[in-house]
Image (cartoon, rainbow, N blue to C red; front, side):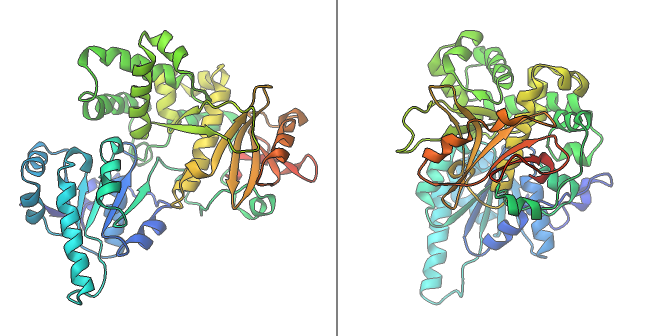
Length: 435
């Protein structure tokens, strides 16, 4: 039998490997035995399986595991999903679950049968039967939502946050200034130290091994193309797809304009939007929505694009060292990407849907605010500046928020300053180490 206990998975990973605690552990543990199915989605190599391995050890709970990257197991799951599930004892981790969506209807039947046992007193309580991980959620999320509504808990996982890397306590980042002042800050970094971190990125393996950065991203992107992309696009379009991704990497932190990308790459708008959907749903990019409601009449409706890992963005944009990166015209956009990524992680690591809380603003009068956080019906305007001492121009558009329906909170400028400094009673310079 190919099913294995994962109780020893971390031990056999090697003497040079180590586990970095993830903020999302607490949320995941709280969901176990409240849902029969838990699904963790996110880009490749962000640590989904490792997280589950660790949780099984922490709870001293035997959990079996299979991966559908294994061709033989994948064929078994696709050809006879009922037999496949009977063969492997629960609780069971199924890695790369999206490769065999045929399993869905059979998992639903197993879950429904389990519910009947609870209803009729044959079983005391809900137990988590399946842990599903996937890096291609675009193929399965709709089917999962329809087939397992009310039975599945879904978590997103991205690369390591700065707080996880440093082993610092992490919680939701809300820009309420009194709350910010109570937060423990991460270690202060000089500009060049920060860009070294940005260039390295956030994939766990780069912090648990001695892999060379450029080689790591070369291997990563090759694996991504081979396992996630090749079957979705015509092989003749592969070089254009690579050019497309590189074009987007150069645009991180900017508004997404499909026609501009289409013209540069030599494809039509329909193809741009199709490929963009692939990148978005495999977690490579995050699309930040413009803030829209009844009180906003002239807002631009385009999304802003952010790569979810700055190291991958730098690699695809052609940067080979952090010194050149810091001095380049790209430095402002990649700094903003780093900051936005850290804030996104603070939400998803607490089990929150960032899309319901994070926005940006730009109107036809060219008034723009880099980021808006709407939380508990209070909206906070945020500017992001590489400078250590941005002038008052940084907050010149914050008054736009007075016209919005939610209550306006204080404004902040996240930047390279060393200490929190007040512009006035309502607006503050805040070091990025407080994220």
